[in-house]
Image 1 (spheres, each protein chain N blue to C red):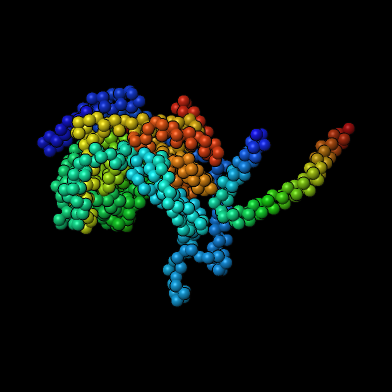
Image 2 (image 1 turned 90 degrees about the vertical axis):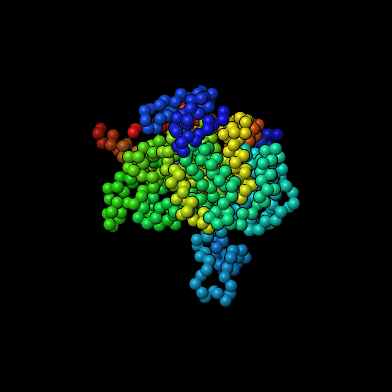
Length: 76
Length: 551
């Protein structure tokens, strides 16, 4: 029973995605093409985020801490 | 509650109208509104609240709507490309091989939207009905094998689909044999063909009887009826105005008014929908600057408005427009196609709804298609105007006049409405319609949908916004045995596609509850409840304009 509710919920989410992007009106082969493109773009975005964001965050943190940390050292 | 005999020395006194209203027949929500007589002009003016809603959707909805149209457009280009390069069969009209070098006959890009977006969800329109379009009807089931390019009928009929799309406001579209007795008699007496125009051999005694009745119903001097409602507008406006006249037309006027205005050859200026400031500034400019190059005064200035706008559900601001027209000496043409029979305490349209004198409006036009269950239109007003139209209207000279059984149907519906058949059935229908309308709108507001229009109008547009939801909504409602009309881009602005419900006096409370429950469920499933004000118990949250009439 629970599995059915979860499956229904995921179907509902998928249906919302179809409605919002207007792919509900497309023919099946067009829908497959659209899903492939969307998934590919999403995968690329996620991969780029995974590769670059931690490095950027660390560099930004170092930059700002050096700026403020360096200031307090010089006033001693 | 019969209307006291309204003709007296050839004039219709406004006092008669007042008496009708004073006798307590004007009831709203069970409270009788007292009518105040304000001196000479505009005798009875009930200061009722004019509540209209045009709530804007949240920003993300507009963004997603454009995203949806963008996806549709991209795939449209892709399919067009495939069709042009022969990768796919072309189902649209194309020229013959021998004509390929000629000037193109079918301008492909103009039909882009039709070909690529409308075709995909086309099964929601033009559904064939096989019974009378009363509160319920039967549909012929049809399926498509090639994505809506062609349909075939399975042979099955879907029975008793609840009808939320027909303009059957008072429920006169019925097949009850008792009700149609007189119509059947007239059909036996006259047959169905007229085979002539009004000015030649097509002027029957039935038309004269009907015109007298219409004039009496509306409280005016005379009226003229035509065979077709659309033709009433498009053929009579050219007879009334011509070159050198100015037409001020509302933004959202019906195609028949626009066509009539363009055919007349007059200058047309558009004012914002129901916006009095816009209309006043146009009137002032027209009077101050006159005609474009010669600076002469305009021969005539006529304002074209509708009683109820069928796509918005809004009611015209008649008192303010009448005061403007008096101040600037313009003429007023009121198209009451949807409001005659549907609003007003006794069903006499927006003029009665605002408690005004029918003499205030110069040309009263309406149709019999909506509330009277027949076909045709009328123009009513002063005797001079109607006599002029009898000779000069294109419709009278060239178009076949109304056929007698249809005229009899209008006569019996009108007599029922006025109470002349000895029953109170007409008034009951009007009140039932008012109750149904208020109930339906209140429940929809409470559920959280965005509904446009005035609280008293039986036309209820429910906003869907996203193009993907148009098809899904209509199909799912049909699965639940409810027939709705959905409207998309060319008829409405691109971001505001909607489902339009027409409440009828023939709908029972159970039918409305069935529809409302289905809408509730579907609203949650399709995420249509965009409204930020969900409870109607706080009226101060709505935009409310109390109009004060200044003379």
